[in-house]
Image (spheres, rainbow, N blue to C red):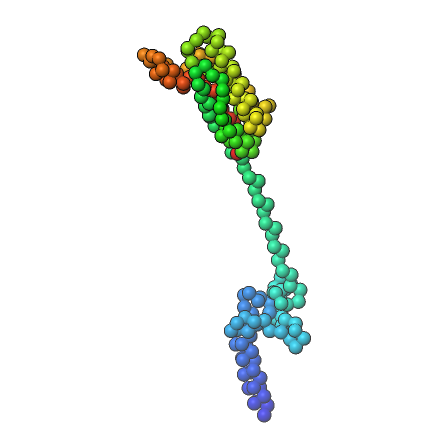
Amino acid sequence: MKKFAIASGLVLAMGLATSAQAHPENSGYWDESKNATVWKTGTGDCWRHGFWEEADTVEGCAGYKAPMAEAPAPAPAPKMMATVEKHIVYFDFDSANAGDVSDISSYINSLKEVTSVNLVGHADRIGASAYNDALSMKRVNAVSEALQAGGVNASAISTGYMGENAPAKSCDGQRGSNLLDCLRANRRVEVEISGKK
């Protein structure tokens, strides 16, 4: 009978050894060898083995603390890109009527930041030099007023005029209406817009 009891005890111990192990993920606890489920006592406590340390605590067992989730990094502030854009407003012969410049004012107003709006007026070579200076100044003022009417801040606008001294085309050999048509490239206001978008 005594031999039978000892044999039974050995068989029971061997059975426990093969069915209960400490898996790496449950280090410090006895668990089921097949699915790594931690064994629990009748009162619901996890069954620790003799080498258990506080750092071994796993979810579902006493003392477990879920790791603090890291707060997401704040979204980076949107970056503004510096931009320089050029436009040209053309004029009829001997005219200072700027016409429709709403496309230019709309673009300027779309920028997140307007650094400067530089306007330079020009005239063709027909007529006296002093007259052409005055005409190029009238043209640049007309464009400035039209842009301001379109909502562009006057403080961003700077103006200058060149008269007939900076032609875009020479039109040599042209006469009459052909000359006037060719010189249209010189009857202009150049608009240079600097800002950020």
